[in-house]
Amino acid sequence: MHFSLHVSFVLTTLLVFSGCTTNNAFSRFHFTAVKEQAVASLRTSKINLNNDVVGVVSSIYLNEVNPQKYNGMEYFYIAVYTKNKDTLSDPNSIVGSNMVVKLNDALPVKIKKLDQKNEFEGLIALDNSWTSYYLVAFPPSQSDKLSFILQDGKFGSLPLVYQKNEL
Image (cartoon, rainbow, N blue to C red; front, top):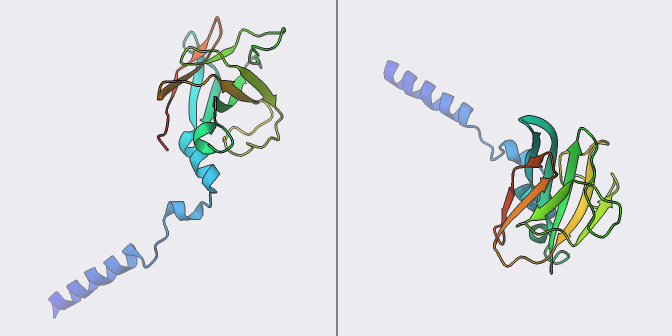
């Protein structure tokens, strides 16, 4: 009798704690296919100056997120925050900045500074008024490994590494 009570108690406990649902922590998230691809592509690095963090850079490789729209060149959506509110140097502008981005040591072909409200809004969690957003295009890379870096004469980020055709 005691044995059957113990077995019944264990089985009831297992049934209660295992649950009868297929929900998990991720079942509450409702991402579109583009949002899922963007989350998988998101890379973030601190910007360091002499072992002090002076900013943050985040990037999404758009060729993997929306290959129908972004192809031919290497496209990135980036968000940059620095304490000094530095801006990226545009290779097509006379007015420059010391802060540059490179992809496999190549400078960008185009940089477009975006408004706070833009088509990529919500793809990066750094959605605030003190972050600058950019659409950046680099020449096509023959390498499947893409190493994105932000730097200037004083500081820099760690490389944000992407593998083409990974997603």
